[in-house]
Length: 184
Image (cartoon, rainbow, N blue to C red; front, top):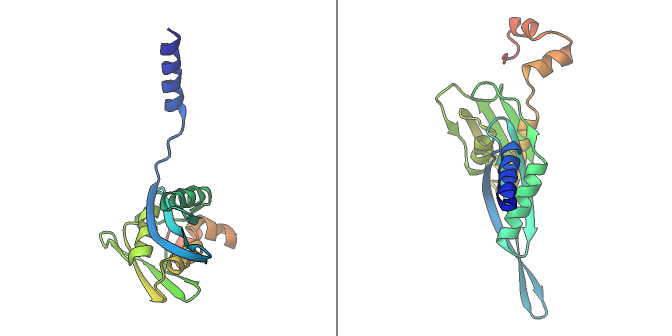
C-alpha cells in the first residue's frame, strides 16, 4: 500500500516538473597532453552548443580528464549561461557581423525556404536557436571555438523591433511606417 502511494506521488511530481527540451550538440573535443616525469597525462576539452529552438542559446567549454565528464560539464555550463536572441519569423531581423580573435562571421537574414547556409560551427548555433533560413560566411580563422564566439558576438548585437522602438522613444508602428526595421 505504502509502495503504491510512493509510486503515485513520484508520478505526480514528474508531471508537475517543467520539462524543458534542449537541442544539444558537441562541436569539438580536443585532447591536451601534459608531460610529466612518468610520461604524458591527457586531458580533454569539449565545446558544446545548447538551445531551445525558440530563440535561446548557450555555448560553453568544459574540461576534464575524460571525455564524458568534459562534455557533461560543458552542457551544464551552457544551460546555465543561455541568452535570448530576437528572431523574425524563421530568420534573424537583419544582417550582423561578429568578430572574435582572428575569426569574423557575417550572418544575413534570408527568405523563407532558403535553409541554413552556414559552416559547421555557425550551423550548429543557428539550429540550436531555431533559425531555419539564414546565410552566413566565416572570414579568417576557422577554429570552431573562435567561430562560435564570433557568432555569439554577432547574435548579441541583434535587437527586436520593440527594443529599438523603446530606445528611440517611439512605438513599433511609427518605426515600421518609416521602413527602418522589420516588425515582429
